[in-house]
Length: 385
Image 1 (cartoon, rainbow, N blue to C red):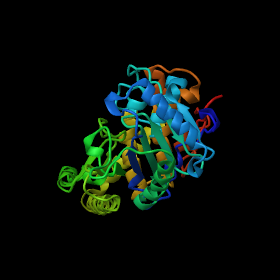
Image 2 (cartoon, rainbow, N blue to C red; image 1 turned 90 degrees about the vertical axis):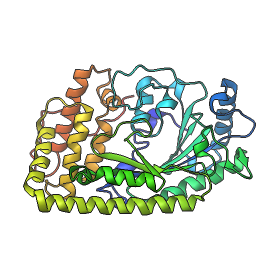
Image 3 (cartoon, rainbow, N blue to C red; image 1 turned 180 degrees about the vertical axis):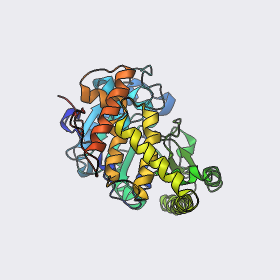
Image 4 (cartoon, helix red, strand yellow; image 1 turned 120 degrees about the vertical axis):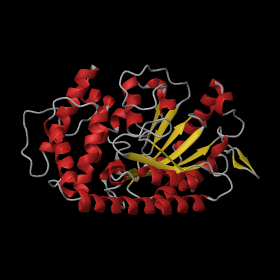
């Protein structure tokens, strides 16, 4: 398996806006929590337990087709910036990389060293990865573009079967798969859909919709999952329970509810055009103008402005910008990616300036907006050797 620097595009497939309702649904993620028999897990796991599990994963990963051509990235072997890139690409969690902050957008957070035995396995063939020794021994994950619950589940289910043939999972005949947190016990399944809901926010219907989610067994979080704040009108909708229901039931329920939320969002957007068309259009163009010409942008400010531009693209009120472009801006303007493109650490002020320059470059290269050749960095940052 290869090293991180040899696979610069790892974890970016979900940006391509190819899935169903991609203008509203950025991604679908299905995750399974698993533990290995004979080794303590959760808070009771010690270094020898974690390292033994990682050895087992290394031993068997090469024999699993779905992980062929991928990478095993041990967290202690990576520098802080590389670990944060994994977090920003949603391949790793704050806990796994040793971060105290809940969101990578909070620059300057005090880092902690990742635990020995922690790693991320990234497939070279499919949008799949495995977090090793996070809260559970294994967190199997599929992350795809748009609303594609069944497709994401199919891939992670196949990986689960392949790994399960090689590793003895901790399983109870009555309770199902055993996990560190009781809320994951049973199927061990967490499915989430990342949605953009500016129409519901602007029409002040969002509280009603979010409250209804709790009444039907779902919950919502921010861009980076549990503990992260909601910015830019992006919400992750996911299941709360895993015990007592089958994987199919949980996934069907999530998809049905998300489709209803999407319809509410589409209805809200039509209300905006009908009742506040001029105000909505002005808001969208102001957001575009600030992004196109600003010389300094914080990540939170960027996300809020991108929300307006994304709404404008969906409503066909802006030049020919692609949804893929807007998705790319969300990832490559995060702190670790900006530093990676610059090849050095950035101060908060430099961070904001590089972010604004990158946004100007991208927006200036698309649609009917004239390109500004003075701007840098390059259109698409890549990892330096």
